[in-house]
Image 1 (cartoon, rainbow, N blue to C red):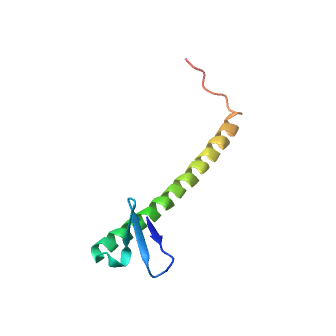
Image 2: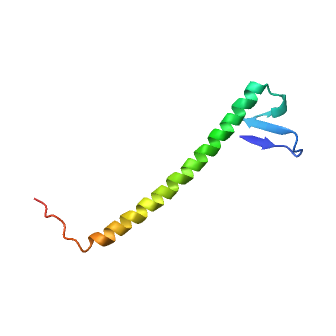
Image 3: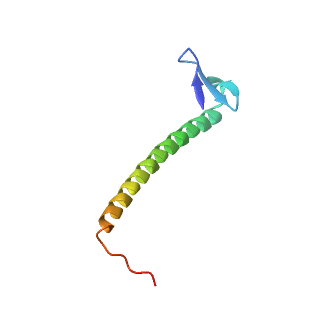
Length: 77
């Protein structure tokens, strides 16, 4: 969402193809940008958590499959 120019003190907001001097924006807009950055970070964190859970679930399914090989299933009626 934000890109930083060659000078570290001149943050640039790139939004929908347009660039804005972040320091020149009103405080209300700066807060919205910060909120979007937090939301983006939270989304990435939760996406990573979902990936970990999916791998864990797949591992448990494989274990269940292995352990069920020695158990007779109920016959279909």
